[in-house]
Structure formats: structure tokens, C-alpha cells
Image (tube, rainbow, N blue to C red; front, side, top):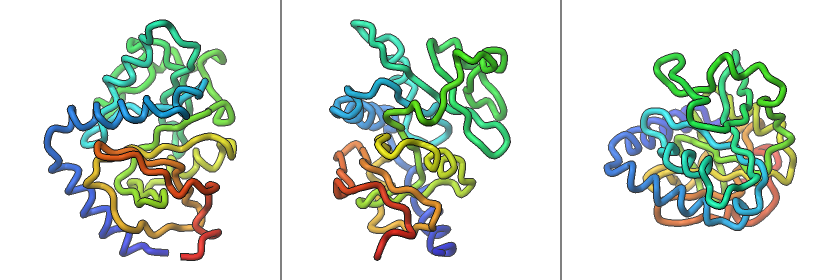
Length: 208
């Protein structure tokens, strides 16, 4: 459903994101707004992502989250890929990361195996979700490989999903498939979008 339309949106918003200037400053505005949310303050276990290429930058926010003053009991988690799935890692310091495939930072292989560093999807209270495009109802368009779709299908219903994007990535409507999960909130450098404050829905439950 929506294949050609999705491809068109993906091309347009990916180009807009690539051409977006001052990404570091705008990213800080986005992550500051995210971290000021009551839902973030209340979350005991937060899944961030380590940004790549043109995504909203997360390094500054992640480093800050790891060094909160006074220290917080909040668990900071990052994903890494194994085959077609995202696995979750309890990040305790920036030196837990090292360049992996294509130079992308990921948890060091030798630190992933311990049971004390592995995190189950059911533990997550809030997830910071990257994407290529979002709409004001919480529709999300990723890169098309389904990593986050499969992860989000495993989390608790009350886990808060927060999409982060530059304003240029917000479109009027993202066509969704049955496996797509809507965001609860979307944060840009300009605004915090409450995605109608309604229950999380799958595309098959919607009546657009």
C-alpha cells in the first residue's frame, strides 16, 4: 500500500534533510525540547539512537544523558543490528561504542554478550525514533528496511514513542501499511507535536 507515494516522499524529504543547514544547532534544539518533556523526565529506561549521516544529531544529548548531574537512575539504551533485527544495549559510557560497519558507531562487540548489558524491548519506557518523514498524526516513514517496525511491534502499549526530525521532514500525510506503528509525539526544532493525544494505532485500524 502506498509504495510509489512512499518512495516519492522518501526521496523528497531525504533530499530536504540532506540540504538542511546548521544541523548541529537545530539538532540541539530538537533534543533539548525532547529532554524537557515530562514523559522523558518520568522515563526510567530510554532508547536513543546513534545518528548517522543526515539524521538529527544525538551525540551531544547522549553524552549529556550519560553524565547527568546529579546522577540519574535512568537507563540509557542504544540499538545495534543483528541480521534483520535491532538488539538493545545498556550504554554506560561513550567508550562502550566503537566504529563498526561503514564507520558507524555501535556497541563494542566484546561488551554485547553479557546478560547485564542486554535490554528487552518490554523494559523501554520511551523510544527516540529516527525517520525520513513524519506527519502530524504520528505517521512515520523510515528507510524501508523495517528495523524499527519490528522493534516497535514488541514494546509495551504504554511505551512512549517520540519521533525526532527537522521541520523540513514533516509532510501532510505519510501513507501507512498494516505493520507501521504511529508515533505518540514528534519533535522538531520548531515545535512539539502531540499526535492527537490518542491511542497508538496501526495503519489497519485507521480510517483515512
